[in-house]
Image (cartoon, rainbow, N blue to C red):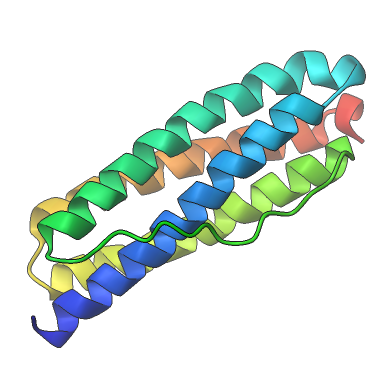
Length: 144
C-alpha cells in the first residue's frame, strides 16, 4: 500500500472515531435535554444520531474498500446537561468535522480516489447545513 493511500485510511479512521463520538454525544444529549428547550432539541439530536450513523457506515465501508480496518474506538465524548453548552459542543464538532473532511478531500484526490473525493464533498455540504442550523439555534433567545 502506498503512503498516500495509508494516510487517507488513517484519516478516514480518525473521522470514523469522531463519528462514533458524535453518535454517542447526540444520543446522550437527546436523552438528557429537558425543559422547553428539550421540546425542540430532543428531536433535533435524535435526527443527528441517524445522520451520523450513516456517515460512520459510509466511512467504515470506504476504509475496508481501500484495504484498511475500521476503528471500533470512539473519540472522547463531552458530557453536559447545559443546553447552551450542548449546542456549543455540537457546533464545534461540526466545525472540526468540516475541517477534517476538507483535509480528506485533498488526501482522496492525491490518492487518485476521485469518487471518494466527491462523496466526501457531499458530506461536507451535509455537515455545513448542520453547522448553519446550530448557529441559528444559538442566536435564538430560547438557547441563551
